[in-house]
Length: 170
Image (cartoon, rainbow, N blue to C red; front, side, top):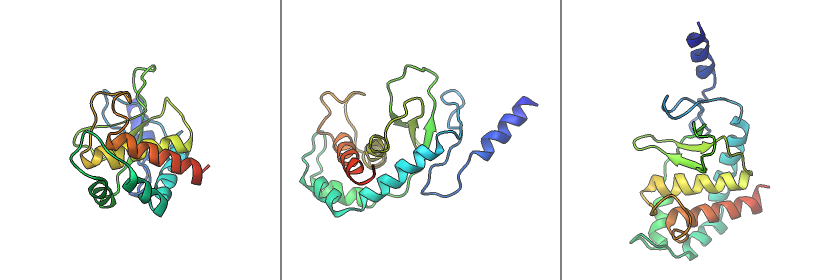
């Protein structure tokens, strides 16, 4: 009975519009889902979409220098302009002390935001840029920390997205 009720609750949490977050169960061993932070995610997605289409954002992407890639700024911009919509979902890591802010899973088209770490809309928009425009386009960085990776495509895009979101969405 409890399993049936849980399945019903999870199925009701799905959002059907492709450009908005879809809050569903990713992997039973990794996540627990809820609909409680959906508004938070929707606001960040709307903000990220808004700032991505600004000429000022594109100018900042073109003006940046990137490490750990052979692509120049024009190739980076061209690649991210061709990015298809991605799903944004919440993830509740089992480890409540997890420092992860967002992640992706190989073979899964979605990016996951750590719902245990509520942050500002501009910070989350930066994470969406980092994951959806950086990692989903094949750009990576060494290790899981900013130190030493500040000039990689995902971190530069995340910084640009966060700063532009702070300026235009808050």
